[in-house]
Length: 256
Image (cartoon, rainbow, N blue to C red; front, side, top):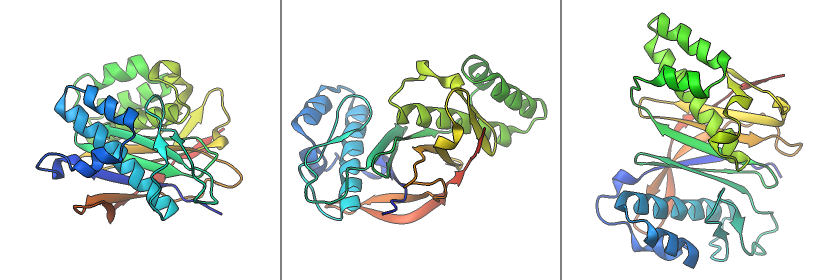
């Protein structure tokens, strides 16, 4: 069965009062302990909301409420627990947040997948960041755009590089110290230095508020022809539900 990659976006700023108690109650004991240990209110609310949203995305995948599934609290959001109520294996989750936005992606079982979202703001040190952390090819692309005063194109490419790299590293459970320069991002393509690029697909999109990217390992059962739609997540007083489609992610071409 073909499982299309899905992405949900929630703006926690839409919750004007305290976070709903249902979110906290849905967490595992370990997740509750982790949430209570976060002294910063915004970080605690974001953590609870992100995990509550992830459980809703999982339930949407199975089309049933499954209270036995849990998300690992350390490292990538690996799903654990009993999924015997479904004949389908456990899918791959991705979680990311930036500012008020929480992004959750879900991809086919038995693949690697990761996502990243970054809120957009002018960065005076963007070129310095690119020179230190991006590949030489990426840096010179950005430098050329800056020299030609193409500010919008510069910002788009900067955040595209940033989010694609983060998503690809998260898919493999790696930190940014483990390979930012192993992947090069172009405006419409990407190249990997030590992994076959055709083994991966990268989807990316941006608007004035945020940039997002999703990296998915390609397999025989999950080819690179998917179109990924970003759906709005809405809280309707009892559970999350999907709202309108916010945008369609474009797929970058893999360069060999």
